[in-house]
Picture 1: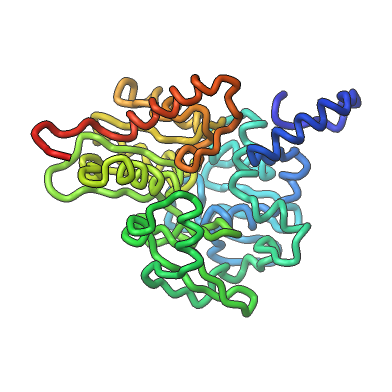
Picture 2: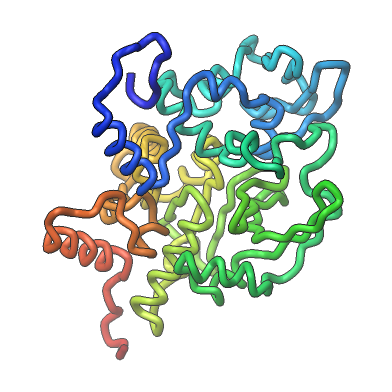
Length: 357
């Protein structure tokens, strides 16, 4: 089984292989989580990172509105002592991996571990750092005294510039959030979703303000037949920045609508919206989660789906492409340059006839 190392396997690889693997992992920023590490994450903290907060608490039990389906009354219970969950509506329960199976609709354990690790970076590094969002009491909101203002912080704008993002575009699409945590003030970029919540991001933290949901951006005027799908708002901002950079006079940002998942676990919420479009371009990550999501959409929508990730296949995601950070340095510079040029052609639509550039 790929993706984790069983404790029952005692065969030790040569030291040079370990060093080589470690170098590759560090160079591409991959975190390999084991099953035991995943089980050490509190389910309540995991749900908090996904944007779900308990409705009530009874002893060791936290009650939620189910993250697996729509419901009016809370019937999803988490036993904080056993670190187990149970959904009375569907009659299923278990540990965090069983929960991930339901959220991501997969039985592939390495894929599930990748999804958990990707969603909870602040939780599985918390034990090594004095500041931990994972230590937060689930009975209190993570973001207290939340204030939403226009994005203007020099520190946040500098962070976006380092990621290659056009800050003028970011100011239109994002907000600036100020909040209190453990008596200390913090601030971050906030990207709004359809339910009134925010995806939260700064240089040191990634999370969300509940409620969790997708973001659907519809253009004014005639309904669009094309929709572009992104996993996160940083990918969406990267796409806009690339088009403006390549053709500042006529970037054609409004010729299609956009859906931003804000998490792969929100894919089911997007399917009903995507069904209204005759053409769907998927700009998802070049990882297991992204490929699985794209294949799922192809199975449902068929030829309406176009996998745009092939144009930046040497990069983990669209932002890494924008920043020029390939997964692995190509041994053939000419081949790599050809791939970059192909991606540039894809990102920039053809010039409109009769329009002088």
